[in-house]
Image (cartoon, rainbow, N blue to C red; front, side):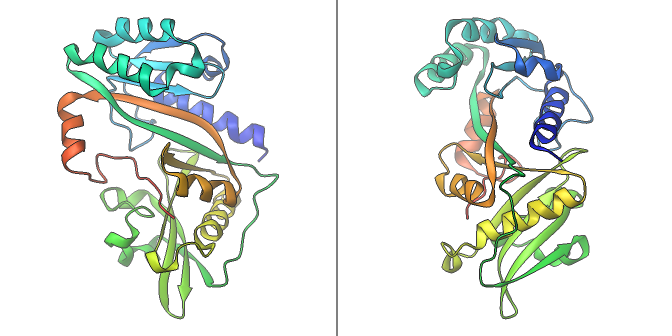
Length: 268
């Protein structure tokens, strides 16, 4: 696959997730559509949306529930694209949504491989490709970013780094949608900053591409360690997302972080 084909695949999936056209992400003005559920959306998305914002850099597309649509449209009309996801303005949106029982929840940055740069890296440790049967015994707290036990059937493939017979790092990928597999990564604390995360991420990305799927990677905007890993592994920023959820769910997110509530944040 070329970089253009990979980007087009991501836009097609985002269009499915939001219920819009892939061409909407290339427009120069905001696009707001009515939120609707799709069985082909990424499996970890919380449907139906209250409001879900996506930008590939040209504009912002938002799928919004009817009750929130006017508020969303007013917000997107007020600020230029480059300022829409800035915290002072996001705070204004949060306060506008609060009387309706909603607020801003998560902001995420998504990455796609640059196939002109991506190559499997080495780290000085033995690396092994792991299939689904190999992953069955690895649903442990130390691998909770690489694997997702509540959706274990979606975990398709992994690459492990071994020090002797000990697993010290693990990258896993989940088939979150038909054509794209998401990479998650964990490295034991005492083995970090040794290049293991980037080696595992790059090796797994290559394995995914060999299977004619698109690897993608996600981290919170503030997770610089994960972002640096993405860059080192041969990924580049592709799109950003921001979602709106009920105030009750946001309160739950503030009091109990669980993998079922949060999109996993990879921490090399």
